[in-house]
Length: 426
Image 1 (cartoon, rainbow, N blue to C red):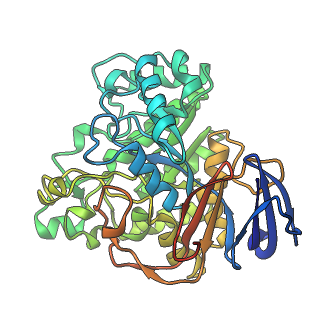
Image 2 (image 1 turned 135 degrees about the horizontal axis):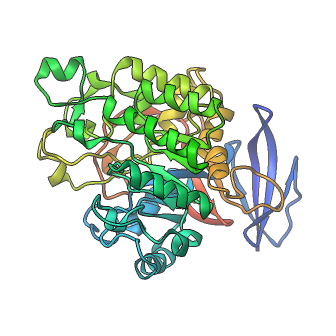
């Protein structure tokens, strides 16, 4: 049966215009001012809400296999669907890691059985994501992954990253790098800044990130590799990426809502502990500037669920990471679009179009004959974030009780409804 999204609004040249959208066999077959209802249609009254291309998150931790107490593919993709995501890219820090065809195929079977949205896995750059192991067989894995990443660990060996990027260029795939020089971490767990100094906390210098971004962009320039900077957090890093793009380096980068909205002075407990840490005020505004001028390509969540018990260990010893799939778009819409810092078109570009382009996916736009990956969003209702209502197993968020607008209320993947807010749709 065909699905008709009736009485919705879509973006057209930065304006919202009324359109009906007709879906058949997972594909959009018509977008018109008004589509006549017939008996062969399932009609969904969108009630003047915004119809968007589905969101794409290039950086998510699903924890399965290995840590199902933190998250599973089922709960993580349910959280993604609720957050408006139709495609998520799963980082490989699982147990086992998808570093061989056997492990990767086992993961793919689990994704096929349990995932509510499309999950594109990363493979690690090195065997088991270890520093002292060999590079994975990129050629055998490349057609089954969205790219290669050791997220959670910076590649410490310049030679190893050089060899990895040469392989990435040879096999036409993506390297997504967690940039962190471990020799200068000094046991830090927050940003090394004024607040850490005043409170006696061990700080992580910005140099640990920026020095690897500088190294890697030079390697990417030398090798012509397709290179992506994960969760950029420093003003120096933004400057380096901006300069690299001007030189024509094939580099992109991502930023999280927490690095755009929080600084070192907001840190109160372990729910504000993530890697890289939220940094100084100058860093925050450099990230915003980089996002607005195109230096930073997309917004990701770095969704990293942990158990309550783990996060209750305290700021110094609790694990790094926060959840974000269910809150990312409302946070950005409320704090950037509603405040006129950015347009709604900008937000959709960061959440959908740009990641689709970087991953070479045919998504990110509402176009006839394109797959019906769609998110319907209420742009007006104000509601507080409630971590206790999360579909994710994780409750580790610094944004609990923040009041937001821009809530996804229905998500469709290949034309199939994978999430709907019962308050809007029966």
